[in-house]
Image 1 (cartoon, rainbow, N blue to C red):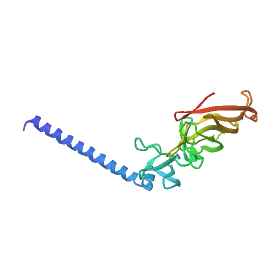
Image 2 (tube, one colour; image 1 turned 180 degrees about the vertical axis):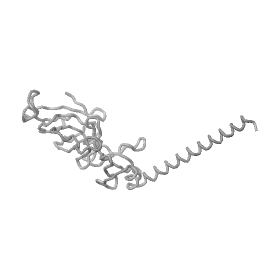
Image 3 (tube, rainbow, N blue to C red; image 1 turned 90 degrees about the vertical axis):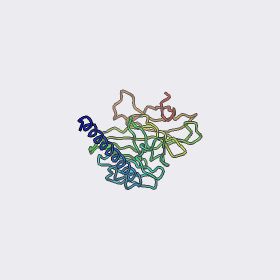
Image 4 (tube, helix red, strand yellow; image 1 turned 120 degrees about the horizontal axis):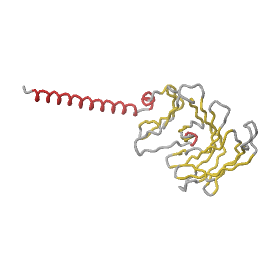
Length: 235
């Protein structure tokens, strides 16, 4: 037999086997994913959850082995990781205290106004984010729906308690959380109000030269507004 023909047949046979293996692998993983998305319990196990924290008919939260808390949501009768829905899909929680907010560039998903995650994976120290309050309600993006501005506090095991202002934007599908704007460390929040489409947060702070042990006594007002879906400082 001509060696060229022999080796050509061998190469074609090998390529055919490789293609078949790839096709079988793709169908296998599509089946695995389809099963995983089919129920909360299946997706819970698929994501490696080790502790169930809360579950409703439309979402659930659990802790994975790294200690991180994740949120699983239902969309079109299938279950997905919050923030990893099919392209173009967008759902938000019905309660703004369960929404996700971006703090210092990191997404923080609240559960009943509370979040607790390790400072670093495996660490005993926790970053704890809490709903503080001082709400103000009003339309901040001109869509005719009432948005909610309020304050969050965050601690990470040290002596500092950092206060942030966020907005829960009301949509037809629930509340969309914004990025957080830092007000300061160990300040004294006073009032939050909405006027002419702007958020005004009043609080007490210290002089730059004061030690952190000094009680806040200097009145400060922060002015913020919504630009697109982001919260920004006006002045």
